Length: 226
Image 1 (cartoon, rainbow, N blue to C red):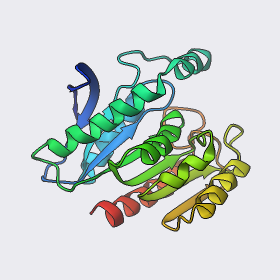
Image 2 (image 1 turned 90 degrees about the horizontal axis):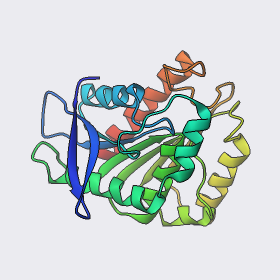
Image 3 (image 1 turned 135 degrees about the vertical axis):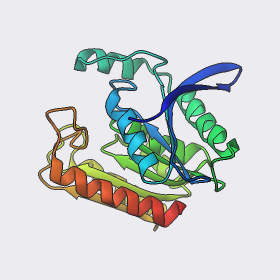
């Protein structure tokens, strides 16, 4: 979890986030988007893992300091989240990263988990900051036709035993992307994995699937970001 909390400015307001940097720079940059719990240690750890792999990683705190551990509380915060504001803050995080001397490239990678995974699809559809986008078991946007606006490489990672984002939703996403003429995407389902199988601080964690998903993630970003 090596890194530090920082702030940057968007629309005249300070936005907080957790920044982790690699030993060797300049390096490509990645934005890491939280689950519905908030900017918890797991997400900070993921940012640190990206830094160890050679990326400047920034995890915006979309709840601005709020952090919960109970599902009902998390659901309430997720429902109250102002999505246009969150997307603006995520886009500003990308602009901030690209302005740094230790970042190379003209676009960033973006990855999100659960709630953050759904936001990845929106950010990739509504902004031009992403050169590569990864969704971990995120909900499809409504209307799903928005994904036709995505203009970067996309990787989706899902659990076949996910009760909230079932394989049928993954197939809806695949069909929407194909209907829009998109070709640069991959959607992978781990048959027996539940929702949030990548979070090693939850009972849903599955080591084998998580390790494989991490290797897919690094391969994808190396291919598309360098």
